[in-house]
Figure 1 (cartoon, rainbow, N blue to C red):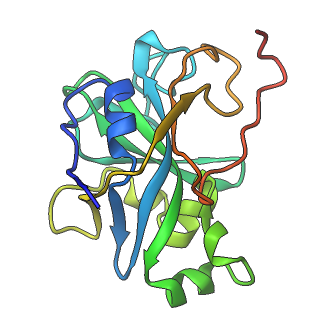
Figure 2 (figure 1 turned 45 degrees about the vertical axis):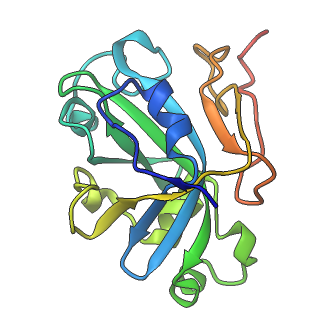
Length: 194
């Protein structure tokens, strides 16, 4: 297998996104391979949380690259890798993963779920890793609680529209590892029109 390094996070989100596929996200004993992401690019992207400017909720996105932006949505937490230069609120939503280590702990957080689906979908992924809003702003490239690590290049990375996005839906900024069972099902927003 070819090793994929942690990408240069100072680049725009739509370039960082596909480069994160195959990298490893680890919290304690639970580690997973990233297999699905979506890119969001701040004031130039009406689907981004940062589109209307900074707020208490999205402040981490306006900070330096290499930190985790965590927010609460639809009853669960979602996490983004902050990228781009400080003040340029770009983020890559981590939507799906394949658990590599820490299965016992992951299973206690999602009892009765098949291993292949433990981290399928952004809320399931954060639950499996034990990520909450308290982790917002956590550094990812140091020896902290949450770490972004090199992984392995997948056979193929596919690009397509983002899940359940009504604005800027035509941008092909959802990136997936082809054939992975950790990739969530695509769902178009009911107001998105082709």
